[in-house]
Image (cartoon, rainbow, N blue to C red; front, side, top):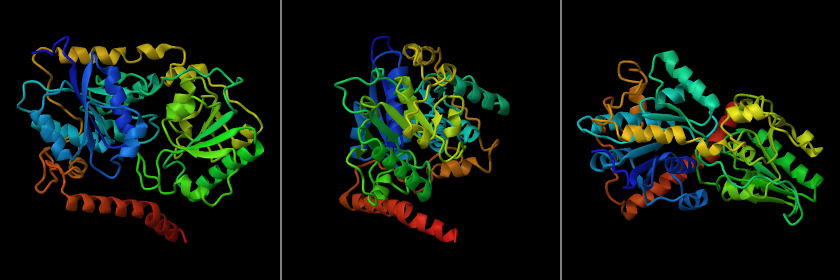
Length: 438
């Protein structure tokens, strides 16, 4: 039977990091045709968010628990949901799609499956998109992304009808009204990224320039907005936390390291500076002066090449001298920033498509990813095996089930293993890399 027009939709969000949990939850609320009951599932892995990170993200669910891939698939087989949002890295999406195809093959009805990207797509476009193919909706955060996504799918002969243009779900907040009395000191915020840039030299350079800006402008408040604390992981691995680099500097009194919800930080921001963070789009949406740094070059590896044509590219020397970038309106429109007020309708198409799929006579067709054992026999099995699934989407023997709460010994072992992994990423790996460069 079609879902009731009055009963809240049952929606599940599977996420593998703090930022993807935020994206998935906010997306679920924006694309749902009516009220929802939302169950959150956190995929166990290196980036599973800590309680502190979950609290800082600022989104909530009716239920929230940690699962393995196998337990998630078991839940999807036993429970009846209307919509499922896969807020995962590309390989995770592909593995879950094949697992879901398997467990739903004999069910007359299944949920609408939605996936997409947390922010700006500036690398691995074809790889990430093809790993997401098979979902009913592949969300594109802008008109530009929607055009690129369809071109990739059409170019390999894959069905591109799933591509649906929306916008970033976390845009919002009060529009910037400029400097005025009673608002506090002029505030410059540098939005740090875990993996961009990725060398000690470049990260130290950016920190030193930020500190130098604070010394040059003692009347300003200069904030270094951090994503995570040392030992915590986000969507990307952070080998060289700015907190540790800052310990070696004599920081001026008007310079501070801050955590917290990005929207709350933007409430007091007069100038947002970043290398290529999605925070730039949040800032531009609110009409806050925004600078994307060119000091380290305009390079694909940094992601700031995405902002070519934006009018926001600038160097620290220019910012030190008082430059305030002026964004290009046409560029903003193509990026889904919708600073002109169009944001209110940005999710209408997705909502309409989901409503139509929910009411589709006879239910939805089987999930059909582009990658199969026929089209990618040398690639797909490895993608699935990383999530303990065989080539046909069934769990491999010995796959972790997580069908009960772990006992004290398992909790200790898991905590120790995560600590060892993070130590290897943040301490051992950089040393090995430096030795290799000798």
